[in-house]
Image 1 (cartoon, one colour):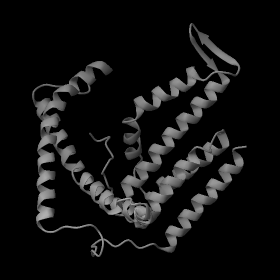
Image 2 (cartoon, rainbow, N blue to C red; image 1 turned 30 degrees about the vertical axis):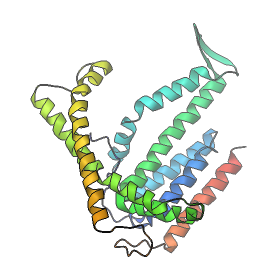
Image 3 (tube, rainbow, N blue to C red; image 1 turned 120 degrees about the vertical axis):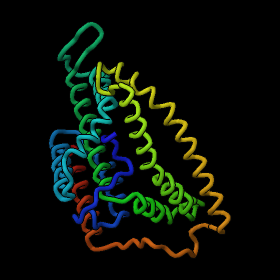
Length: 267
């Protein structure tokens, strides 16, 4: 369970830790858009250098990013191999029965592989440098302009913050169940991939039962909030205040500048 990074926050005093969560969330959206412009070696190398700079600025150990990639290995490998063998056209480099590798497929697989790695790294940086509640507040603030078209910004932020509230408890339940299974002689790291997947089955049923109990607690929390007269965010005071600083503007402008360079280099 150490590879799970959802809802995990690493305390620190780096520049990224001190940034406004709205700026970090907006920066992540911009970087994801920029990733789809990177279609050659030079543009992807520039983005990898940017990711390395973010990691060094955040002062977060590399093991967190390695663990984040471990949980995505199957999806990354499947998508990359699919692009490698299923992309038509180009010069044939290798052929074995119905499997054909072309130079165009190899280039496309490399681009998809880089995109997956960079998306995981950028999202991991956001998760590890931002508290879940601050992230929920940022989502609500960014959705506020959409209230004009009846988007329930406050309700979405509240739902996100309450959902993230139960992530650590579910992780604790999973770790406790795994320790109980280990005490009964189950080894989760032994055998091939299918045997390891089979060993996870004894975790799922008690975890599902525990999740139902969490749903009951969430329902009780909703009833308690209604009994206390809780209403939407209009006119409510806030304990956590978000403050946009010059540092946030500089960071967004820097990402836009990098995006402009990559857009120019992609041709």
